[in-house]
Amino acid sequence: MNVENIGKSYDAIVIGAGVAGMYQLHKLRSLGMSVRVIESASGVGGTWYWNRYPGARFDSQAEIYQYWFSKELYESWQPSERFPAQPESERWLNHVADKLDLHQDIEFNTRVDSAHWQEADGTWAIRTDKGDQLEARYLIACTGMLSAPLEDVFKGQSTFQGQICHTSRWPKEGVDLKRKRVAVIGTGATGIQATQSIAPEVENLKVFVRTPQYTIPMRNPKYTEEDWKHWSKNFTYLKDKVLNTFAGFDYDFDGRSWHTDTPEQREQTLEKLYNDGSLALWLSSYPEMFTDAEVSEEISQFVRVKMRERLNNDPDLCNLLIPTSYGFGTRRVPLDTGYLETFLRPNVEAVNCRETPIESIVPEGVLMQDGTVHEVDIIVLATGFDAGSGALTRIDIRGKEGRSLKEEWSNEIRTAMGLQVHGYPNLFTTGAPLAPSAALCNMTTCLQQQVGWITDIIQYAEAEDKTVIEPTKECQDEWVRHHDEVTNQTLLPLVDSWYMGTNVPGKPRRLLSYCGGVNNYNQHCVELARNNYPGFVFA
Image (cartoon, rainbow, N blue to C red):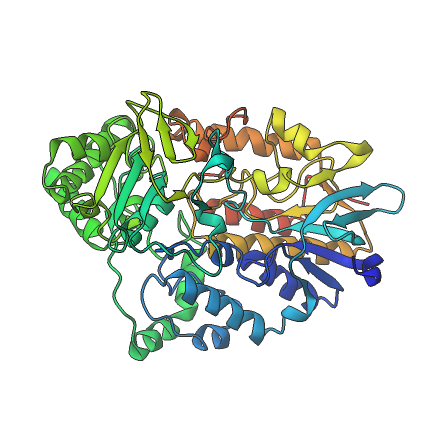
């Protein structure tokens, strides 16, 4: 405990020093506010600090996974390739923090345990795991959409005689995988990256497959100085473009329709976007894939054919690794670098968890329900996250009259645009449920837009000499109704996935990310600000 942090008061406390938290600190400091960021890691970066597992990298292109408030900052860092790997991403964010002199206002290696609203004086009382007791008028949770890892997943994990590593808590010093028998449990985007990266160096790799994923080969060319001069020249165009597309990328659906294109035009479009080696096939081909089951099936079949070719049409591998029970794009679409081909290696085995689920972890390795034990030295848990809500419900957040956010969200997850929650004055959130976030958004686009809106409403309140900001119940109810109405026009809620919270037992089922489009969401936020924030109470 730092005695200097007993009763210390700030204008704002920000939780998290990732992409959003760093920008929020910069924005609030520009208003002349006293700000402290609380960060559980030893450095900045958020996602790009914690996710240092082998193969971790962007799947948004480097030229648009950027901060947009300074062309000079944009030009000052040249990515080495289209989709940089984790170490480079972490260095980039440290570069940003150094340029903006952010480190001085960040408390590292510290976790927020609780935050309680004090009605009498209109402040938040914040307690940390170090015993710090802080106060702030505004509490801004930049805790991340995918930052609450599901680590204790299987019975018996503590009995394992080898090493267990969750991908999101990979040891900073690394893990010696050479000539080891390794298990990877999970085949989402993270499991795919880890599998394809470690297979060449391990003695034997067993990948435990339950839910297969549609996956697209990544095209990842190196970037030269000339390339970056080209992107820098287009800075203003890109900055405007990403805020006005469906998913916050520089590509979009652009009015193309499945029903008016000929079969030849459809095939040509799908081939072109597939070969782009980005998420463009998912987020800029045909919007009907999200709403029309027949279109979804045809596009899914297009991707399945590609996947079968990559697996040499091996019937067992195709049956296990190619999805058929859900449509392309209704789950997170990963980009890969030789993932499917990895299963053709002699040292790699795909273990079918659909037919025979995992029973538990035993001292020797992984025990299946049929009694088979897969003996391994290292277990890699690519088992995902308590997405959207988990990072917030792991903090004891209490609003008016002691109401508990964890308890409320255990019954139903509700927010006002993912930016505030009724009953929790002066609490703001980024990357939170019911806003565009990791599911259908280039995160730097969405996080900066949300940070900008939060900063603007705080500045508005300060100018009006108001100290408390809270959405009305009616405002929140209207947003939840709209969110659900848009969701139910799509195929997304028909599929079990972390999008819907179904990967966490007992979690209320609701699409965690707004799917009405980053462009539409942004326009709604702009209109609220233009009309002096109807639905929000200032006191």
